[in-house]
Amino acid sequence: MARPDRPRRADVEIEAGATAEEVTFHGRPSVVPGFTGDPDPESAHGGDRRNLPERVEPGTTYHDVRVDYRIAGRVAEDGGTEDPGADRGGPAERGPAD
Image (cartoon, rainbow, N blue to C red; front, side, top):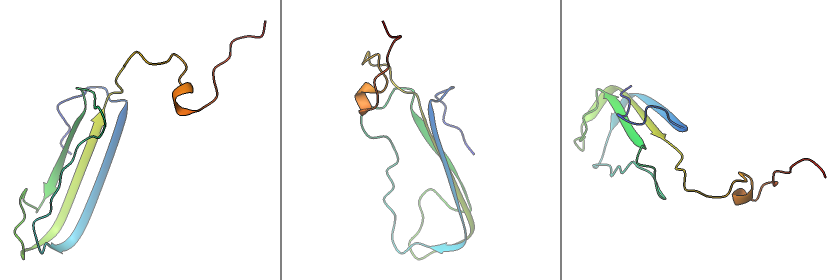
């Protein structure tokens, strides 16, 4: 599978793949991959296709198809809270008892 140019080290990676013996598109699909929110500049996505062009032709049947896709990203350091559980409603970290 093609790897995105960046990031070299990802904090989060999602990979998915799909295969089909045959598939026919009745229209051109609208595919908009990407990230929501405020992605880190080191976020990337990319994929590979076998027997399937980047722009499919409606009404054409494609055979022995495979699509692989990867999304990778770094978690942005935004200077937020030092307590990792605080912003998610999780338990607060506690120090030793006095």
